[in-house]
Image 1: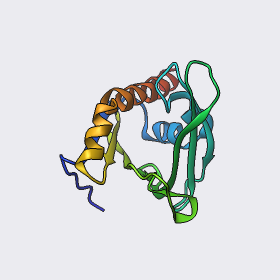
Image 2: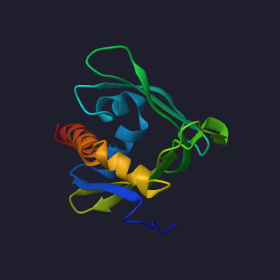
Image 3: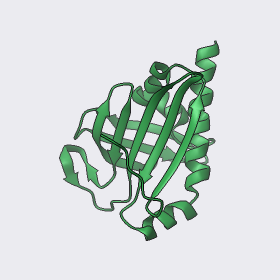
Length: 160
């Protein structure tokens, strides 16, 4: 399926990660690794559910400042193509049930690159107001930071 984007509705973060695609994929699909980079440090993440099947639950929590863990992502996987693509949304929760407050659908792609992996996170919104709100909430800083953390984790593992 070809990825289409709309500059008014979609936000994207992309970078070349100097690690094999399988290592970057594993960092996304292994709960203990996902917890290491999924939220901007010094906040911490906890993976509650990671059912990497279409309709499967994607549930994470966040702890900021060492406090209690609270809600972060409550969503549903739409597509999981090993080593290539993960698509999730918070418009649905597990079992394809409608969510209370839909906001995003994210398509994460992993492509071979001569230097390692071309990693792209494309985040789609239902309208321009949601896209603007996400941008204003710090999308590029937040998603950029976690992408840097993903790269640091996988590149360090790769070089070590």
